[in-house]
Image 1 (cartoon, rainbow, N blue to C red):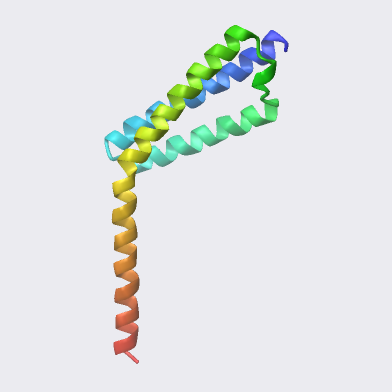
Image 2: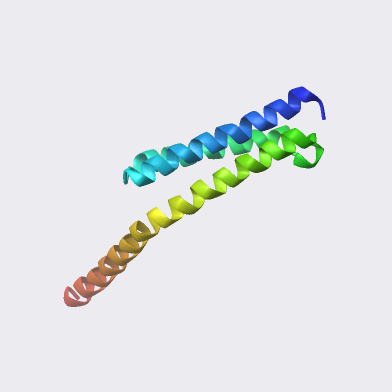
Amino acid sequence: MNTNKQSMILDCYEKVRDGSLRMLQAARESDLDALIAGERDCAAVIARLQALGDDTKLLDEPAKKHAHEIIRAILAHDAEIRDLTHPWLRQLEAHLGVSRISRRMAAAYHQ
């Protein structure tokens, strides 16, 4: 693989890693807006990476090692984000469930 394309691919990986770290910081601060914005930013970089034709099999060994280190960091960030946001999702699901039941009861009594 030419070194320019390899550099572009690794740059995208690093941007996703940095974005996932910002998302983790947002999750730690319970900043849902920043978390969602970070997710959008990461998705845009991933789309750019896919357009480049990301093929890590063609990276040279040092670049491949670096890519794997970046991926491990992204996965660690993702795991912690999920741990932090899981309670939010349960609360939201409970709230939505209560809201649906309340609407059904209100509709039943107003008929």
